[in-house]
Amino acid sequence: MPRVLVVEDHDFIREGIREYFQLEEFEVTEFSGAAGVLESVRRDEPDLIILDVMLPDGNGFMLARDIRAFSDVPIIFLTAKESESDRVTGFEIGCDDYVVKPFSTKELMMRSRALLKRTHDPGTRTHDHGRWSCDKTRLEIDVPSHKATLNGRPLSLTGSEWEILRYLALRNGKVVAREVILTDCLEYLHEGPTRTVDTHVANLRAKLGEADWIETVRGYGYRFRGDPT
Image (cartoon, rainbow, N blue to C red; front, side):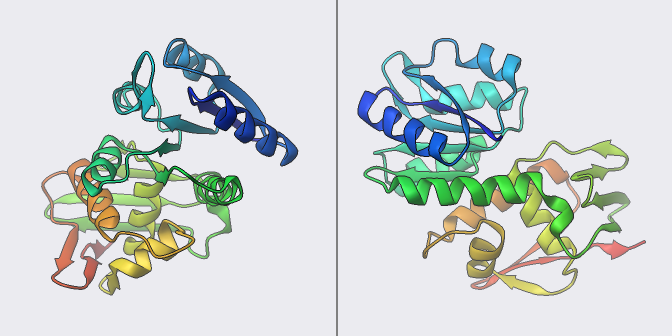
């Protein structure tokens, strides 16, 4: 049974999410504010966090940043803040998806299942393993174990970063459009902002170090440029 932690100060919204997710056989833990959330994440290790940005006793962005300091648990921001700058801030922190109020609880469920599928079921992918080198660094991706290492050091990636890296690397040398990454990797249910892809790739590049693993193809998308080993 998947475990979801819901942090939302609006009682009606929180209770609606709880009831819908429980009907879908999720185990739900609820918080109406930031107090106690970090301790719960450390103790219970949820499979997914749905996190409101505007909380009565804190800021969801800051709370997510604190969570990212010790956990890669998938995070969906749930908020009325819909500007592009707010979305970019969320993705820069390391969230995996961003749902704007008002929203459909059914869509939130579908996004949650899609996120959990690509985070926890990597063995369903068609490629299992790969090793590459670039500028004297070595990258290895092991899909069944959901691990990536750089020069033997494990990379700490969010679910979205992992899926984009896996997708690009296993299509080494091929240009992949931003729109394709948005739908195939992030599994958006409708057209979304391609800036989302750019932010995830920027975060991924920072974790991959100075080597130029991912090339930007201006006006189109990205290409992985590792040499197979």
